[in-house]
Image (cartoon, rainbow, N blue to C red):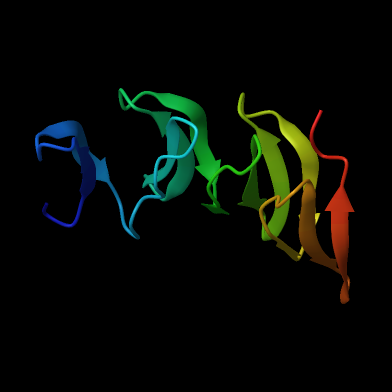
Length: 117
């Protein structure tokens, strides 16, 4: 509504007000969703409360308890509490899949592992 996004329940009732900016918010995964407000991305719970404050340029949905976040043009990874578990240093970083995450840094590509624990 009015170029803002919110969340509805299965019956179509507005559950979380339309206060978030585009692009479209991320889907709920593990009970939280990525949203953008005042130009920064963070994560909210199903009540609409921030569980990870909006401070990132971009983010990806949680996978295996971790989410990729971009800060100052570089990608890193946070845990469900919003703590950095991998410093923002990568040119590209994809979500975990079976404990491994594809990454690129300084023109080299590979996989990161051991990020769950």
